[in-house]
Length: 113
Image (cartoon, rainbow, N blue to C red):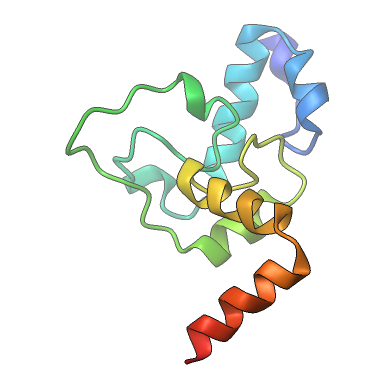
């Protein structure tokens, strides 16, 4: 474990990818431990886990119950593929970011009706 001492969860995704598998796992644990629910959480896929896509999830298993706002605050500076969001939230976010201002305004107008 001497090798992992001094590793910080604050790094870029590219820096994270350059780490060995063991170091990546260590940093993943450090990232997830930032959550106040970590010790009592049963969700197998944590949005604060840089290796979330490698984690299995079976139908009916628990989901993260930390609010999106809190996850986004905790995620700042962490090497997370979905920036602290679930895969579904991130897909919606990127879709919105890719829309033209005109399309965004149409949607906003429809919502306000």
